[in-house]
Structures are given as structure tokens and as C-alpha cells.
Amino acid sequence: MNGPFLTAILFWLAAWAVNVWLARLKPKNPSVTRLINVIIPVLFGAALIALWEGVTRGFNVPSVLLPAPSMIWGRILSSAHILWADFQQTYLKAVIAGYVMGCGIGFITAILVDRSPFLRKGVIPVGNLVAALPIVGVAPIMVMWFGFDWQSKAAVVVVMTFFPMLVNTVAGLAATGSMERDLMRTYAATRWQTLFKLRLPAAMPFIFNALKINSTLALIGAIVAEFFGTPIVGMGFRISTEVGRMNVDMVWATIFVAALAGSLSYGLIALAERAVTFWHPSYRRRAGA
Image 1: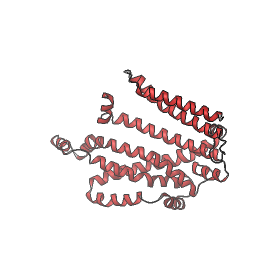
Image 2 (image 1 turned 120 degrees about the vertical axis):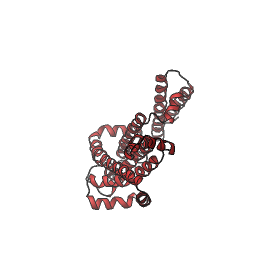
Image 3 (image 1 turned 45 degrees about the vertical axis):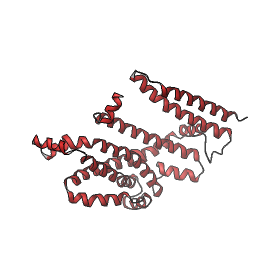
Image 4 (image 1 turned 30 degrees about the vertical axis):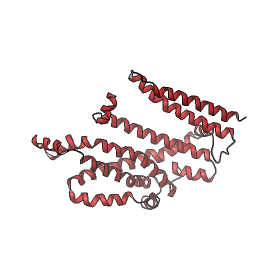
């Protein structure tokens, strides 16, 4: 009898039943609703981890193929100082710098493109071409141009995040209707007043979509770029090195840190979106539901 696997299956079935019961509840208190919305994904994730642990322990899966979650957690605790140094190098330096520059340049370029039909016809196709460049081809070039430290990884992130912000902002600026623009003209509003009081607020859902997409693209770009040259620190360096040493638990620990950083970034941007675009019809429908 495979004890760990059966225990994991029983826990998974119990968690599934509780989640189904919670999903069918219709509480009138909004606080209880929010609490249920948190409990369901947490319980679902815990069930998956328990199933993972049960399969690896119950069937003695080699740790080189798939280490148990408890083994990965132990590695995280014992190598916290290494993971923190990698996080500083990859995320705090390369990702944040590249993300701010890429999104900022894309936003400013979109404002200029919106003002000029010539730029719209010239920049958008070129930006599309740049976005189609494979990262495995761009990263070595950036390493040769900017060196092995975090600056070359930030340059890769700039290339990856520029086009999504450009396209989404241009689409958002064009989202306002002719009636709203005519209304601003009747108020004798200038172009800048129309831009800041009508068109940019209307473009905010598009801009936040680009920010959320870029939050994950930036992390992927920086990690992949580190495969092509980096000091002896960084998430990409750690993954490539520890795979060669067959320390797969350390690879998974690094992946966990990267996933946690990406999820937190996405969540913070989603919260900011909720605060800025509270007027959007999708939020009003949820509030009235």
C-alpha cells in the first residue's frame, strides 16, 4: 500500500469537496466573499502541492527528475543568502531598470506617434519588427554592447517591453469616441487639455494591460539574457549552473523565487489598475453583481 500517495489523494479529494462547497456559497457580506475568494485558490494550490509531495515520496521519484516540495523548501531556507543575491542582481537591478525604461520610452513614443500620422505609419511597423526579434538572438548582442553586468539584461528588457506599451497606448489613445472629442471642442479645450483630461484616462485600461504583460515579459527576458553572459550571480546564471551540477532542487528554488516575484509584481499592478480605473464599466458591473 502506497501510504504517502493515498494520503495525498485523500487530501486532494477533501480539498476539492471543500472548494466546490465554498464556490456555491452566496454570502451577502462582501468581506466574507473576499475571504472565500482567497481561500479557494490557496486551498487549491495546497492540494496540488500535497499531490506533488505524495507522488514523489510514494513512488520514489528521483530528485534529479522531480524533487519533492519539502526538499525544495529546505533548499530555499538553507540557500536564502544565495537566492537573495540572485534576486538583487536579476530583479532589483536588471528587471526594474529595464521595465521602467522600456515602458517609459514606449509610452512617450506612443504620445508622439499619436500626434503624427507620419510617425504612426513609420514607427509601428518598425516596432512590430523589433518585437518579432528572437530574444536568443538579441541577448548575446546586448551582452557584447553593454557588458556582462546587469546593464545588458536591462537593455534586453527594454527591447521586450517597448512594443507592448507602444501598441497598447496608441490603441488606448484612439479609444475615445467622436462625441467626447466634439464635446471637448465645444469647451474650447486645447490639445493638451483633451489629452490629459479625456484621452489618457480613456487609455488607462490599455496602458495597464501593457504594464501587466510587461511585468512577466521583463522577468523572462532578464533571466534568459543571463544565460548568455553574467557575473557569477543572477537567476539565469544560477539555473544554468545548477542544472549542470544536477542540483535540481536549487533550480526549482530559483524558479520559485522568480515566480513569486513575478506574481507579486502582477498583483501590485492589478491593484494600481483597480485604484486608477475604478470608473471602468467592468468594475462597475462587478460591484453591482
